[in-house]
Image 1 (cartoon, rainbow, N blue to C red):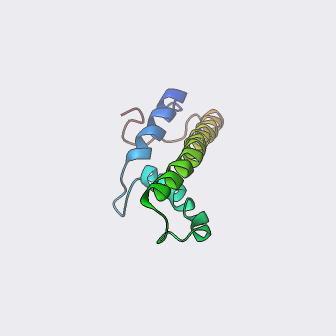
Image 2: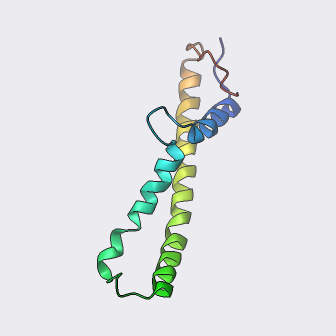
Length: 105
């Protein structure tokens, strides 16, 4: 048995982002939803029933433009931290049992 390579670890993490568990949506959907939900925080500032559609559209456009880069960067940071942790574990425990299915599949 050999420890997984960095490429295998990255492939497994990328694959698992999109996998849907039996009980609900993928981590990717939940992760994106968390950031979308955060965009409701300023909702108490405006009377949305009185805003024109163009104003609501512009506010949403500005908030998505502000939050999306943070969401994308957070996902990259999470992935890099997990790769680093998995590589450290692989170096410390090169003979740890591997999953039956191929990590690179």
